[in-house]
Image 1 (cartoon, rainbow over the protein chains, first blue to last red):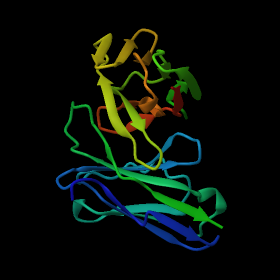
Image 2 (cartoon, each protein chain N blue to C red; image 1 turned 90 degrees about the vertical axis):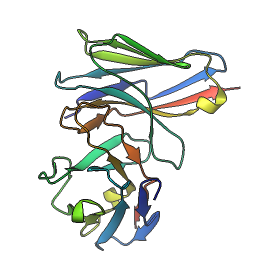
Image 3 (cartoon, each protein chain N blue to C red; image 1 turned 90 degrees about the horizontal axis):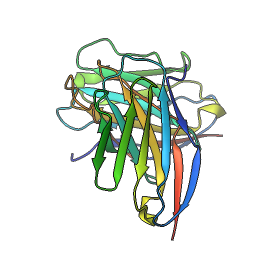
Length: 116
Length: 111
């Protein structure tokens, strides 16, 4: 595809349920990021994948959050036992990963998660 | 820990005004300082970026001023237009690629 694609665009779930959010990055991009944006808040870093390197998971808020990236392409962010404070827009971004560059990130439109 | 601090949280200017958004960073190990623009319902998009060895960069009506010694940088929007109304994020990029964002500034340009 031409851009970063995320699904679902909207997800409403009940507290305690597990959810999976999917990201299809731009073809050929080696770097993939997940950020969380709560209402009126900034972009909170969650996790970063770069090529075959071990992911930087330093932003994951708890062990209920996990992410994987299969075949260096599609990524899935999983939130187990969802809580109301998990409600936010989850944004995925990809970049070419070239060292020394601007590191321009191309964002998807996000997955809006609402936990009732 | 918040490594990039952005202010103000919101800003209202009249058309033609020059809004200024400020950011400060706490870690010297950054190699690029980009600004992103986000419209409602969309993901952020790169607006302009600057390297730390440059003091100013201008692209169209958008200018970044960078003060390395003070660890501060700012975005100026000349002749602002209602279409510039959006949320603006400053960011700092680590050499390995990780991008840390500021808290964002919601700008409203009144006609």
